[in-house]
Length: 151
Image (cartoon, rainbow, N blue to C red; front, side, top):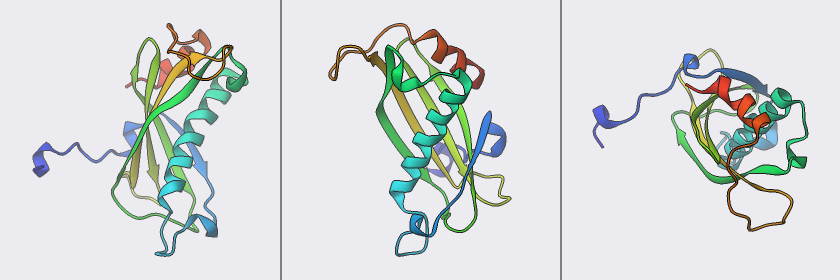
């Protein structure tokens, strides 16, 4: 892929909602930078903490819940312990049964993202057990929390 075909490296101004995570010694791998699995934990935390705070409800107990259908990460530079990580959140797409989030991870004063995650929630019926098909529409309380993040 040529450089002109690559998506631009996101900046702080590309995100709407922010939170900060404390790093721990155990977050780093043997090479001294944040372990790959930790990035995905941060993405999950950024999305669900926002939903809980923005809705004021226990999102686990809703009749329809968001299950993770897809995640990915683009890495741009190393980050790790001991500095905190700023997590920016934006909604890329708000559909009828799913929400696509992008989560930018920043460390220090750098204006360009160190890593960016893509996180897809598909809403399913929480009253019938596992294996349910997507529900339509997304619960109103979730849509209300996600709409201000759409860019």
